[in-house]
Figure 1 (cartoon, rainbow, N blue to C red):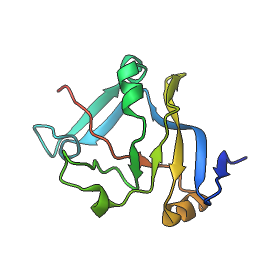
Figure 2 (figure 1 turned 180 degrees about the vertical axis):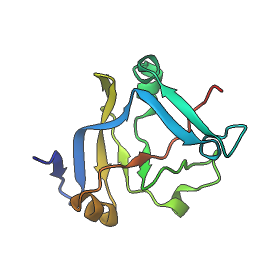
Figure 3 (figure 1 turned 90 degrees about the horizontal axis):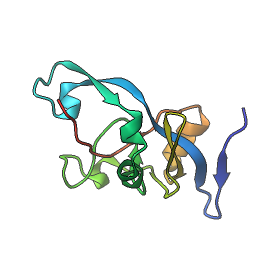
Figure 4 (figure 1 turned 90 degrees about the vertical axis):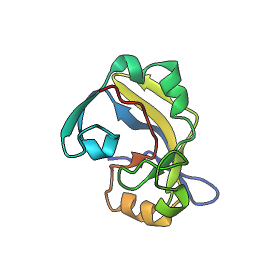
Length: 132
């Protein structure tokens, strides 16, 4: 398999057209999404209509990404500096074939090592609105 990683002048990886979200139904524990029942597993729909909207596409630009699925930022209990940011999405975000794609840049050496060792699942540290 050929890697899409390109190393820039600083030695950081940038990856064009990286999948960052997709249409489907995904399971989350209530505590992960601020649901009424913290221990219940909720099925969350990410629809093509929502992922392809201009508002969603704009909202995915220049987001930090982290290891594990942790929502970070001023509106959460987890601060970026405490969790650690491994990189950011770029501004080339687009929706195609039920998948949201974007360019990403990787800054963390520990994450670069993990990616080189085969790690594929990364997480954007963003908040969203759920309709229960």
